[in-house]
Image (cartoon, rainbow, N blue to C red):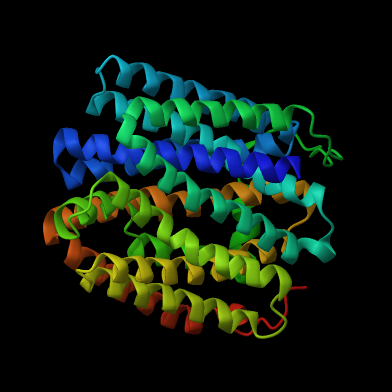
Length: 389
C-alpha cells in the first residue's frame, strides 16, 4: 500500500505541474510549436539514457533509484515555485526543466516497472496491474482538476502543492521494504546494456504489444494540444483545461476498477487491438466536437480504451520477462512509452502548427485506427493470444 500511495502522490503532483506548465507556456508564447517542444525536451534525454537506466535498475537497489528520482522531481517543483513567485518564468526555464524531468523519468520508469514484480506474485499480476492502474487514474483525475482549480490562486500555489505531494511520496518510499531482485552477474558491456532490446526484438509477442502503444498514442494522442482546445475552440479557462486533462482518467478509472474485479479471461489479443481502435475513434470524435461536455465524453472513452490496452500490455511484459531482465526490458518499454507520449506531444504540436489542432487530431485518430488494423496482420501471435498467463 505504501508503494501504491507513492504512485498516486507522484502522479498527482506531476499532473498538476503539467497543467500549470502547459498554460504558462502557451500564455507566454502563444505557440503550438512551443507546446510540442515541452514534450520533445522530455523525450530526448529519455531516449539517450533509458537503456543505460534499465541496466542500472538490474544492478542497483530499485527502491533507492526511485527515491532519488522523486527527490529530483521535488527540486524541479521548488524551482518552478520560486520562478513563478518572482515572476521570472520563461520559455527557456520551462524547456530546461523539461530536460531534467525527462532525464529523471529515464531512470524512474524502468525501476518502477521492475519493482512491481517484487511486491506481488505472478498469479496476482493482472489484478495488481489493474489495481495499480485504478490508483494512477485517481491521481490523473484529481491532479489536473485540482491543478486547474488551484491555478485560480496562481501558478505558485500549484507548484507549492506539487512540492508537498512529492515530499510526501519520499516519506512513503523511505520505509518500504521488499525482497531485492537477483542482481545480474555479467559485467557491464554494450551487449548487456542492449540485452533488453535483443530480448524484445526476438519476442514477437512483446514487440507487437509494446510497438502497438508507440504508434497508436504517437498518432492519436492530443494531450499537448489541450491548452489550444480549451482556450481557442471550447472557450474555457484553466479550470476547463484541468477537466479536459482529467477526462481520460475518468474513463480509465472506470475501466481499471472493472478489470480489478473482472479480470480478462479469454481473447486478450483481440481485445487489445479493439481497445486501440476504440481509442482512435474517440480521438476523431474529440477533434470534431465543439461542445465541452461532448469533448469530455470523447476523452473519457479514450481513457477507458487506453487502460484496457495498458493492463494487457503491462501484464504480458511482466509475465514474459525473467526477473533479472525486467529492468532492461522495462527500459525498452519506457522508450516506447516516452516516444508515444513526449514525442507524441511534439508531433501533435508540429502537426497543429501545420494543419491546425482540429485537423491534426482528426488525422491522428484515423492513423491510430489504421495501426490497430495493420497490427492484426503484422503480429498474428499477439492477435491470437488467448489468456493472460
